[in-house]
Length: 215
Image (cartoon, rainbow, N blue to C red):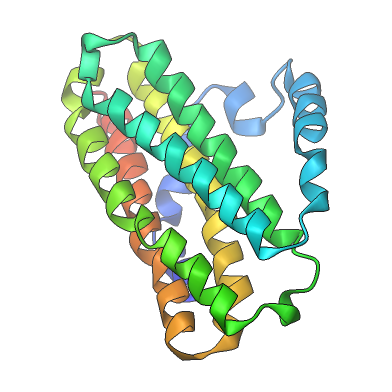
């Protein structure tokens, strides 16, 4: 079991308790539009099964980086832009993370990954750590202004929670792909989901606490 998995288990209380306050359709996943959403997701993501090389992984990292920059810019504008735009940009980042995880899981032959290619991937993800941390800081700082809009705290919590799940897929995929190689590159890959993932986790905890206290 990776440290990342262990550290996430420490926050299991939030994963259980928040079900008491969320609408039943959100908790159970039995939303009336779920079948349509699943169908669209399968349609959009099916080409990812063609991923066969390091270049596919690098391309997915580029998409994540661009989506992260866009979302961070939206977060930093606070209430000067429509909150719906912020949510949309956050959903785009979540989708990019989910798709990145799928690209990595579809890697044709992980055992063929060279140390040089692994280092290239690690070099590409390392700038994401401070970017995620900066985004999380701004998102947490906005909690007090976002809570002034009815229903927005719940939306922000749901967004952060979904983003965390998407990051699990992507960051865990990076671990599974590179850590078995050993050496310094493995250590770098191992720390990536711990450092970047904890930033997203801090956001979901912030907004969960607001929901829990009703403040």
